[in-house]
Image 1 (cartoon, rainbow, N blue to C red):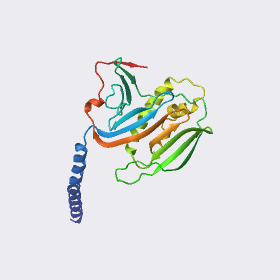
Image 2: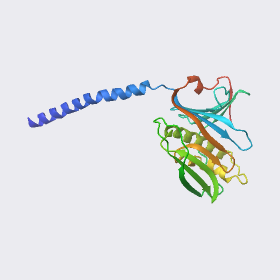
Image 3: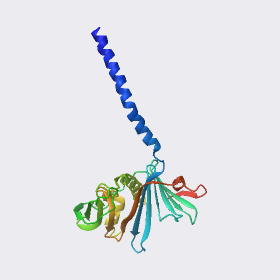
Image 4: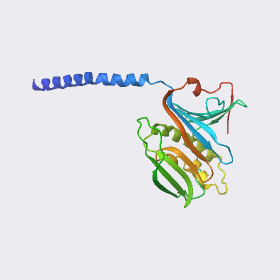
Length: 244
């Protein structure tokens, strides 16, 4: 009789627990359902490459995609599918799409990747959602005892964008490895972009970055919870596709 009473009591507890938890579960499911499919981050940078004028770079990041272009009027763009890990480079002039598929190349750097990283507090500021000053850190990366790369990163801000950037960097670096040919006096460039592509994303979001080989980028604006048109993440159906 006691055994049956204990079992009955235990079943009542399970039913009661399930009933009390149900509203919480439903609320979470509702919040997930209400989140717009194409909501995400809009990041705007100024960018400068060696021997090229300064340009604007726009990066749009959602749960499913990352799009890179030069602004609303740009007909050329890069679309990264975060699920398939495929990069599509769309060029309007010749109506083409260059496709880069994911993979893993075993190519190793023909030089040592010996990094020394120094850091210090930076006075750089970034607008914060909570109106507080965002603490920043300046990192200086030395490759084989030579200055290579500088970063100013912001602590605890825009961290949700970093995974997409890392995923993209890995696919692009793999493609660069597949076509790799060593260049003279380009160890810093090759280390940062090919052999250690996510080293610069390990200490927070880069507000500013500049290199010994002439590349620099600076975040000038950002917005969160932007709802983007579905068409921004589609590829032209009449363009010809090719692979390198």
